[in-house]
Length: 357
Image (cartoon, rainbow, N blue to C red; front, side, top):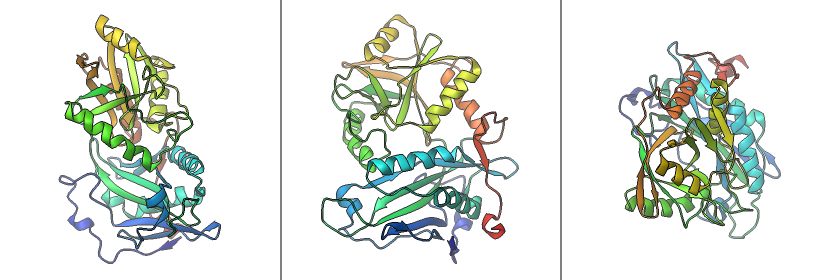
């Protein structure tokens, strides 16, 4: 790895009490270029703009995918990654679906650890605080031809993060738009998936909702995801979540919630969730909770569902009553080293990693 440290670090100006998630970037980033059929040297360099042309194929033809993950700092200033091997496997799954080259474990995991170690002081400490990490791969060849690119860049950038949603949100059950189609790229974290979701979400917001529950493209009769999150439904004391497929992203937080629910002895069923079943449960009072999970948000509890012009209210549960909030707390406690980690999910980032290599 080639390391070029910033000569003008901005960490002294960072106020962990007052910053904007997604717009505040740490001092360094990882970059690595692919050309002539192979990846070059991994470089840890000062964060900043890179020279690209409007003819870059990633912009024109959408060969781009990414991951979302976090680093956490505990009360003893130790720093941890959370299940990074899952993100490594998934970025390569996304890359394969978009006909892009796989990254190596060394590029991905060692790059993450080196970046987080060097800029560990950017990780805010406290409840709901973390460092959000964005590994990505995109086509960089300058060519206005609709074909597979011959050049790519792998990069990792990062931004300090705090709690995403603080209040329960209202979501609209989609009866027209879909996030993904059979045979499409729904199981990949393709950049274009998010662009295509913006317009339907904007329409939902104009109706007074914060997000959408995406339904299947063929019939709109089954839940698939919610916004950029995997979705969970609790009817009585059983949790339901749709199985992953070519249309549904295999979320790391989703997988973690499933394991934590099983550890607590909560019944959880991984099976299709019919919109009709959820609406009937809301009408008869057996629908207790609906929520979304994802890296950035961790858990977003829903307070109402929009369906057929109605806004159907959901129960307001306390922490002790809510499975969603209980499992969220279990997860955060593992991530931040406040509890034992029986699953081996928490990965310590050693200090001065590159000096010891």
